[in-house]
Length: 326
Image (cartoon, rainbow, N blue to C red):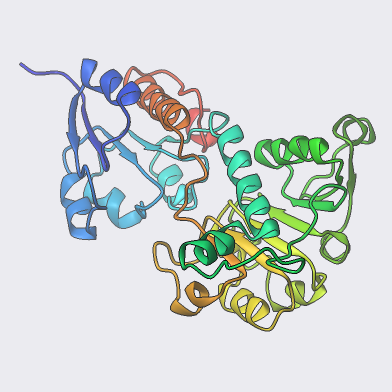
């Protein structure tokens, strides 16, 4: 009689995690390419002991009702706004995530977008490829100096701190806003100064978002906040798209309230509005924050470790809803 646990993985992950799961579980993979349809997800989760999901799937009560015997929901991401945590907790289902391992990759991506937007690299690439470059000019594609500028970090968790640490190499002044302020000693250690949100928006030359998406932080940056920013400032978002009111940001970019933006995430992913695509003062990327071989492999390993721990009756290493393990 087959007593191996059944695990449904919505998307084929990198080998380090998939090999771990396949060694001791019967694994079904929903897709190796595109995302699952809602009906496919609801059908596939039935009869499974564990669900390994990615940030593109909405794991809500309907999904949990499709399988009342689900033992664990393992999210292949740090953020878990795609999962109804309250519903899982009511059912006693542990929800896990993959923090820590993607900190540096995401911080690097934030800096890639920041440097690209500041120095107009994508514009320059397109300009050159189109054959428009006929001669050197003192005023051709002038950008913003990064070195010596002020960086504002909104959300000072692992990734926000990694972004701030990189700013030291550019001799930048770093100010931060976070729900919980650091102690004086920590602020000195990190070389950062706290600012209320409005003050940060008014002061910073570059603003990088690293807050989690919650009901309180949705549209944290809207029309009012964008109006506070300098006309020479840039907004960088590698966290969650809905932290920003995208319609307001599009207006701000079009009307030059701010100088530019670098976006790795969007309000209605994977949909990106045509108006946003037409703007030349924004750099757009398809949610690549953790997209290195090393990081995605480590995320797969953590997702597998979390899943296997619960299936063995052990507390998973990265438990989101602690209440279920009291």
